[in-house]
Image 1 (tube, rainbow, N blue to C red):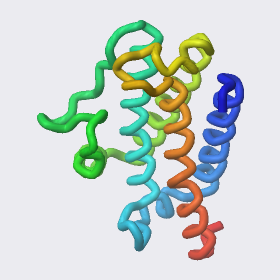
Image 2 (cartoon, rainbow, N blue to C red):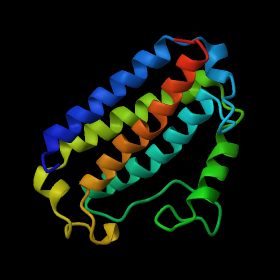
Image 3 (cartoon, rainbow, N blue to C red):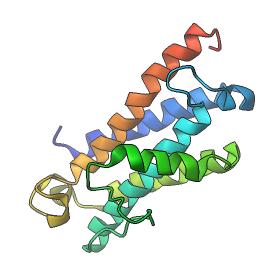
Image 4 (cartoon, rainbow, N blue to C red):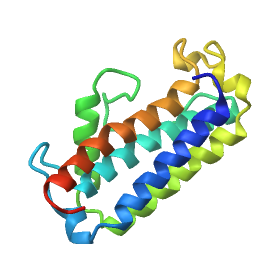
Length: 168
């Protein structure tokens, strides 16, 4: 993958796929826990939304040519470190009581912001692995691909579970 428009197109398609799936489900289905892991669709969407905050911070930093300003996390938690399980647990607890409509709205806004920022950043800056020191040798493309892959990672098992349960 070395084409800005290709990854943006992939991200748009993934967004549309999620929106189509979510639009077919009732709020009851969205709130129902899956057996493995014990997370509802609402929980999964909150998880994706929380990580999108990190992606948006990175893309905004790239756009403004500054260091990323990550959302406030508890002391000791760093999105660039290897404490992903602890961050995920904190995100889960942070969003747990939020209504589905708020989570869905925030997910949509953050996803669309990722697309907007990706369009605004020059392709050469997205592909240059030495452009942003805070990415430690990775290209900004990794942020975009990471968002795409993270959504795919959760979509396929969720779709399989919904089919197995007869919900699709």
